[in-house]
Length: 87
Image (cartoon, rainbow, N blue to C red):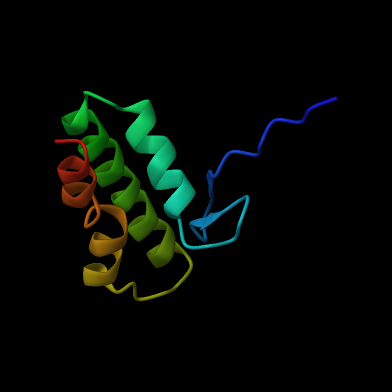
């Protein structure tokens, strides 16, 4: 019997990976997202931007003061690297 690998999905409101507990999107989640949205990079950017806004709202909801620059880098900063690797 083979088991399917567990997906690397966000656990809210902490925005940690449900599988590996790394800050989401972790490396495996980034790879899965690039694969899922292949050929639709603008849709991926919109999805990640919406997720970024939800993470910011969740952080404020927890009474935290999120580092907006770090969250931007975490959610959107890697997109240009993903696009370059497919050219």
